[in-house]
Amino acid sequence: MEPVPNSASVALIEAGKVLLIKRAYAPYQHLWTLPGGRTDPGETAEQCAAREVREELGLSVSALRHVETQVLASSKGDWRLAVFASTHFSGLIDPSDEIADHRWVLLGEVEAMRTTARLHHVLERAFALVAGQW
Image 1 (cartoon, helix red, strand yellow):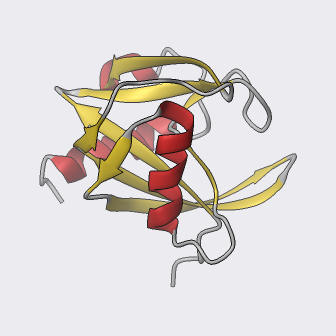
Image 2 (cartoon, one colour):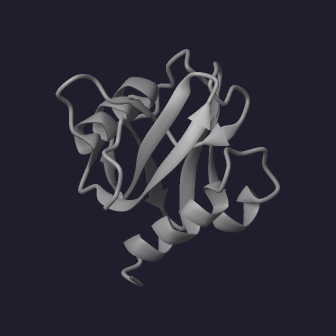
């Protein structure tokens, strides 16, 4: 049985690339990762994922597909992170102050970047999921 998520993130995939953000603050400050954050009370992981994308990037996202749930530890406590993928989003990117940078990248470029743990593995699964490979 998977752990109940208390946070969520989303791999936004378009034209063979994924949108990564560089975190401006802890946890994971200065690391490239997916947009996301902690759930609010009473919020589902899917609702959290959509809200975080909207707050951090100004984008609306729908048709979220669950990739996996990870159990992570940080200086801010334990995270049970539900990772989603989607190719359905709209709007113009308008990064919040939580985002130091953002970039569309090919999967092959991720390993050369300073990222959160296992990001490349998660993205491999996300790309396969949206391509209908599993």
